[in-house]
Amino acid sequence: MPSPNNPTDTREPFIYPVRVREPMRIEVDGWRVGIRFSASHFIPGHGKCSRLHGHDYGVRVTLEGEMGEGGMLYDFVELKKVLRAIVEEMDHRLLLPSRGETCGIRREDGEIRVEHGGKSYALPAEDVFFIDADATTAEGIAHHIARKVKERVPLPPNVRRLVICVEEGPGQGACVEVDL
Image (cartoon, rainbow, N blue to C red; front, side):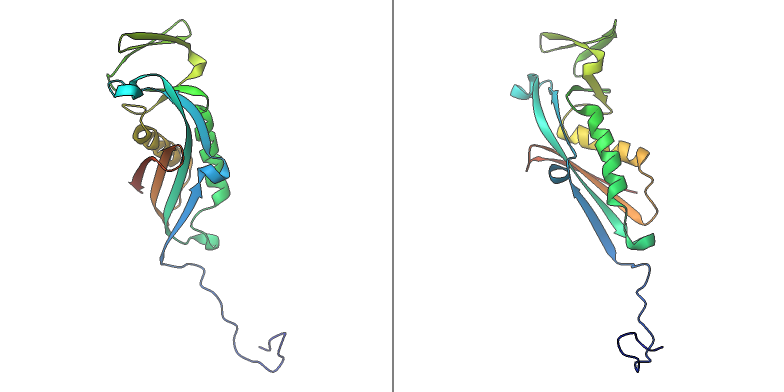
C-alpha cells in the first residue's frame, strides 16, 4: 500500500501491539494533584504523639501490572476521582480507630466521647471519622485507604498490585503494598 508521503513505498504499515506484556507502573503524587487532607489524631501511649495534634497528609498511589485495553494500565482520571472522595471523608476531622482497645470510645446523644491518658474529650459526631484500623498512625490510615480503593475502584485483571503511601507532611510516611 503506498504511503501518503511516498506514493512508491509499498511496505505494509507497522501496527503497534494493543497489549504490552512488560511490567508497568503508574503513580499519582497527592501533594502535586490535590489528593491530600488535614486531620487531627492521637496515638495513645506514644509520648508526645499521645496528645491531640494534627497533620497535613498527602496520599501517593502506585498501580503495577501490565498495559491493558486502550494502551493504559489504568485511567488516572478515574483513580484520582475515587481517591479524592476517600480523603474528603477524613478531611478536617478527628480520626479515631474503629478497632483496638487503646482508649475508651463511646457514642451517646450525637456525640463521640473519648477517654485516654486521664483526658476526656466530647466531640460532635460529624467532626469525627472512624478508620478501619487499630490505631490512627500513618500505617493504619494507609491500610484504611487501601481497603477503600479496593472496594471502590473496579481494578481490571491487568492491575496486579496497589501501593498506598500516606505521608504526614512531604517525605515521611508509611506505605502498604497489596497484591491483587
